[in-house]
Each structure stands twice: as C-alpha cells, then as structure tokens.
Image (cartoon, rainbow, N blue to C red; front, side, top):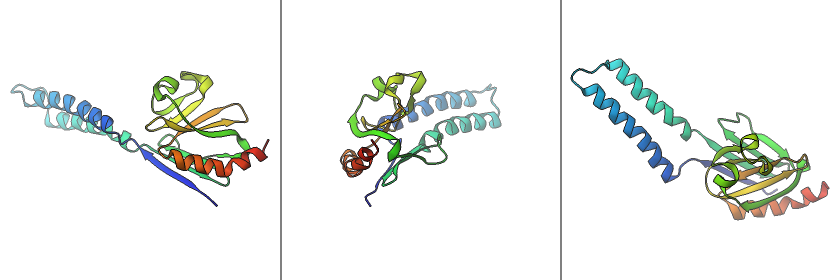
Length: 169
C-alpha cells in the first residue's frame, strides 16, 4: 500500500517580512505615544494594545494544510478551518491530476479560496504556497485543488491509484 503524506504551513520569507512590518509600525507608534510626557495611555492600555497586536498575527502561524493519499482516497485538513480530516473517496473522483495554476488569477490568492466569491467554474482551492496543485474533478461536477510542494510524489501516487478512478467509470 503506497501512501502520500504532506504537511504545509505559511512559512514564506515575504510573509514573515510583511507580518514583521505590520507589527513593527503600529508598535512603534503606540510606544511613541505611550512615552510622550502627557500621554493618555495608562500602562494597562499600552500592554493591552501591544497584546492585541501580537495576538492578531499569531493565528497565521497556526494554519496547517495536511494532505494524505492512500488506497481509500484523498484526505485533507486545513486547520483551523477544518477541525476534522475531510475525505474524498476514489469512487467520488472523476479525474485527479497534478497541474500548475495561477494562485492569484485563478483563485484570488492562497488559503481557502474560490467558490462563489471568485471564479466558481474553477472550483475551490486550498493552498499554502507555490503554484502546483492536485486537481480533483468530482463526479458531482465540483472541483477542488489542493496545493502541494511535492509534485513528483503526488504524480506518482495518483498514477498508482489511477486504476481505482478508472474502475469507477
């Protein structure tokens, strides 16, 4: 039994720089206001604002996309949006393949994207980084793209289970 497993997080350098900048600028303004001689900030208000700033950027580092492909189908979870693993069985899949896509143009960026708020013909996407994904076309007409950083391994496992998809026709 061949199994594909992948776990991804938002760890891109550009994202870290952006998050750092979005934290440093407001933090500098709050500190400057707090240190003024006639400041309206109490120590409690100052610490509260600093806490809110820090807590506002922490959740992005908790996001995790987990993908598993095995003999039963494709399992995925995008925490914190999915608390339980979701499964798509081979019987539900019309086509499954790895493809290159345009995250911004096709789905509006990275994360949990698509559906009614974007180009609904392309379906939904769950991605963390990059422009390679496992495209699923389901028998019910829906489409789901799951981002991957392991193109060769994903192609290999899909080729292994392609027979299961074809048997369901």
